[in-house]
Length: 427
Image 1 (cartoon, one colour):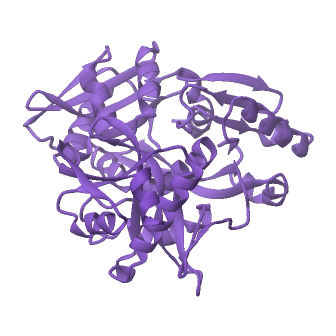
Image 2 (image 1 turned 30 degrees about the vertical axis):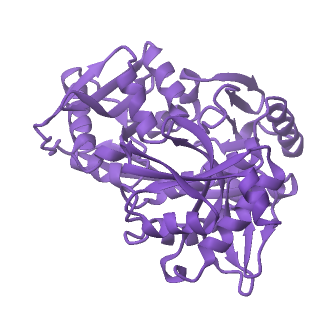
């Protein structure tokens, strides 16, 4: 397969599910109804089409601000590592830029996956509540609209994996004149490690073989799917340097201070320190699984978008004395028993736990939220086995208000504090 076609497809595939405007220098993708989707809201720019980079960046900023979105720019995949050459110009315009490896996989061997016989996989052509529930349980609701529009597209396809009659995983993508692309592999958090992802990919590979689809490539979004694709006969044949840029403040912004801590906005440079925390099995024992690199990167990107959209998110927690990154804490909107509610969340590096840092950060985030938002109730929720988390919630003045079945946590506890209760703490 011609890898040039893969690079072009990477630039253009969002046309399937989002609006776009063409410019002399590239394409502006946007969806004002789904601003949390990065694939739906970004500009792609081409090195050989730009004569005045400063004017191009100003036009992109103006366009996305008019849409109420944070300006995000992707370097065309045809222009390998270009953003490294123009990083000074991007910085001068207010953008934070970075380079990440983007792997391309082609089929070079046999499909050696042996699917779990308890999991059934079918190709689906119509949307259903069961399909939508996978995105809800995986806590990726911004992908719902993307997947719906992909399925509606004439070139779109989707496979659904079911266990005991319930859909627990999805694999979807599209076929264009250039290639057949796997867009996303997603399994509900509760049903990961059941073999659903492997069963989905096995059936996809067999479908391509039976349908004589030969122009197939994959961009692996994380270590786990990459292992599945390798078992299905695919290997990395090319690694490109993908450039990304997001408009935002460059300097560390002092959002909140306590006696010992500083809570500031995330930056891309926090990736390594965050990955050390989120990839640790002990720290993440109350999550379905530790984070891989892709999930950690999305975590930072999600919070950058939250800052732009809501004015808050999870903030990086650093020690004032040394500046060391030790975790995050802040305010986000979370699905708590079917309602999107303001929630104080926190994650602290295991070597700094039991020193009161989570309590200090949570109290600071609570005080900031009541002073700077109109919310009259704040929540914290966690898996019922996470005693450290619910003790932090209690230390934050919260009381247990709900215990409910949760597909992600089996059982979740919800704690809350009202504005009136908070005010009494300060009398």
